[in-house]
Image (cartoon, rainbow, N blue to C red; front, side, top):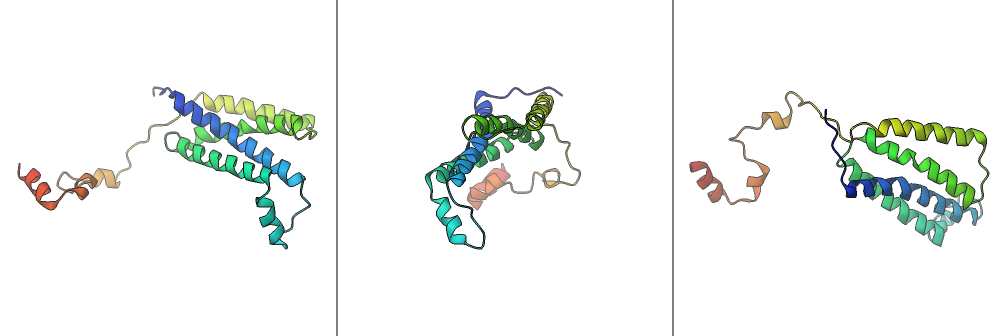
Length: 165
C-alpha cells in the first residue's frame, strides 16, 4: 500500500491538534488554581469559574482543539490522529514545569518519553488505510436506475429527459 503524503494544511491541522489541547488544559489549570476549591454541590461557583479570563481562554483553545480534531478525523484514521494528541503530553509537561511551576517526577518524565517513542512508531504508518468494500453495503446495492442524490435537486422533467436520451 502506497503512503499518501500529507498536505501542508493537514500538517497544520495536526499541529493544532497537538498544541491546542495542552495549551487549553494549561490555561484551565492556571485559572482554577487562582480560585477556591469548587464542589458540584455548589454549581454557582462552577458557573462563575467559567467566566474567569484564564478559563475562557482555555475553553476557546479546547474548542479549537475539538474543531481541528474533527477536521483531522475527516481525512485520517483515528489510529493516526489520536497519537498526535499523545504528543500533547510532552507539551503539557513542559508548560506545567516552566509556566505553572509544577514539580514533575522522574517516573512521569520516563512515561512521557515512552509515549513519545510510541507515537513515533505510529506516525510512520499511513494516515488513511484502505478499507475493503463491505458486501451488501448501500453503495454496492445502488443501481444505475436508482436516482442519485445529485438528481434530488433536479426537476422531474429534466431527469426524465436525461433518462430518455
